[in-house]
Length: 149
View 1 (cartoon, rainbow, N blue to C red):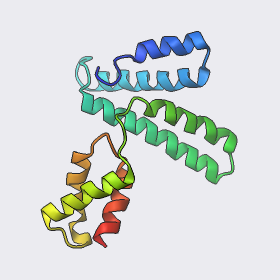
View 2: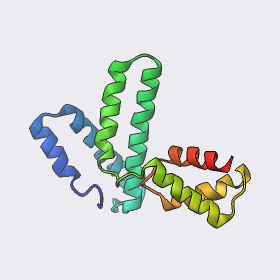
View 3: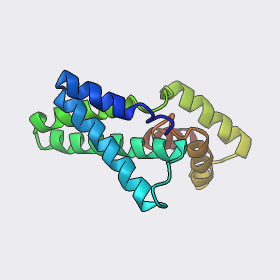
View 4: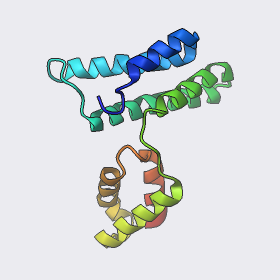
């Protein structure tokens, strides 16, 4: 396990500190990893790319849930979801800023000679592949749309 190598130690530390929120978030990661391992082939280790995708998915789920709770004026339920998202995001590689993403997307548009929204799929494919794990797909999409329109 690449990025999740110290997950068990983190769980132990959270137990010792009696940090229930962190413990819940870390156990969610461990559960997702075990489910993914058993779903693929007989308990094989996940690649670093699979781990990153898994952690991104967990962060996205927490953020989406928090947004739904906020839309329903349930701040009491949204705050723990956001806190868990932050705890889980620690396991992700350093995220790119919007300016860095914009520069990479601009380079891709120049390389592919993309003109307009008809080329969005081509640009998104290359951008998602190039920035896998270091940028949120939604942010990439928003920037690509803005630059192509």
